[in-house]
Image (tube, rainbow, N blue to C red; front, side):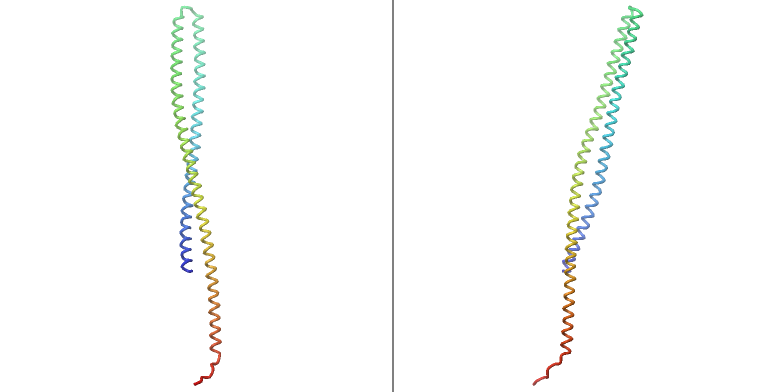
Length: 199
């Protein structure tokens, strides 16, 4: 039984070591989970800022385009009022304005495409981080389950060790009682007179 108790103690120590390792791994996954969550929040914030910047640039471009159109219309009306012979010049100005407007539209489309590309990249990165977060959460749940299993095993081993120690204590008590009974019997035997020796 002493050997069995030693074996149980060894197994209990091994389970305790495994439990400590599982706890350390759980803490590590918890830290990685918090890091991934923070990174996703930062990417979402960056994506929101990029979208806000894109919307602001679009509104600014539209406002500037409307203002330029109004200015060109005003200039055209003034030129028509000054003299009808300035029609060619006015047409040139109008063509220049149209070309400038087309160039600005091209630049806006280019900037919008770049913004969309950056937003797409951020969205892809965000999806990857979310997938990594889901995977990390799955590992986190697995480690927690393993930790609970180690804890259950440790409690079971501790219970068996307690039962074994109780059995050993009861055996020692019975052994002590038997030894006491034996001493009493020896004492009585020593005090009992022997019968006369008969030849």
